[in-house]
Amino acid sequence: MRCRGCGEVFENCGCRENPETTEKIRIPVVSMTLTEEKVKSGSGLFAKTEKVYKATVELNDGTTRTMNLSQSQYIKLKLASAFGVRQGSLGTWVDDEKDEVRVHLKLKPKVPEENSTRCQVAIYDAFDTKKPGVLLYHHSDGYPDFMLPLLEKFLHKTYEVLKNAGYPYWWDSERVGAVMIWLSSEDYSEPLLPNSTNRLDHYESGKDTPYRPNGGVPVFQPTTIMHDDIEYLYKVYLKEKDGEFEIKVKKV
Image (cartoon, rainbow, N blue to C red; front, side, top):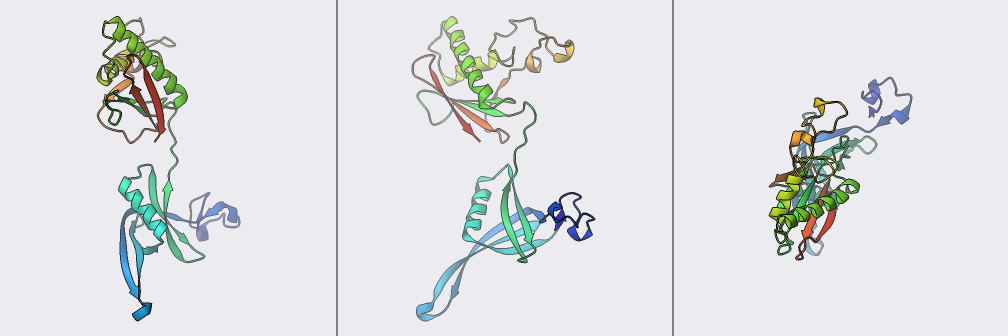
């Protein structure tokens, strides 16, 4: 047992007279190997073959342990290993009462920094709704209450720019993505033409003075991969009719 308050092993803790301050120790896993074995038992008509699931884990305290798993534990850990659970940690804990070691996939709660809910925007062409033509990354404020109205404003403004340029039919992922990036260099929450204001390039240039976010670096940034730190994925489906679109959001 380990004290929740001071972190000491329960037996060495001065808080031990208060059992409510304690919790079972949990030791993080450094590496893990899963095995599935077939074990035969009985003979003749009573012969049968059973599957035995085991995990060999190396713990961060320098020890290595091998333990039996239930089928459900084995499947859960196998899936976790296959898909690479990025926001989780494999852990073990000792059950002092039963004197056994259990394996548990403990998901760590995400604690985003202030204004740093990251997201990505995938833009799909009307002729290919399976694979996005363009991926954009947005570093902060990626939650739906902010991003959905922001995307709508940017998409409407993008079509306006294309139409004013004489190319309303350029309603495809590459041009739409390029214009969205272009429109995101002047303001954080409004699509504005670059250098259409007299804002300063950096917030340190003047206190309480409007400035260009990131010194004019676009808020929407092109990328070729799916980032592993995003919390939301926004899928923008461009329609066959110029200027029309549909937005779907997925919690990652």
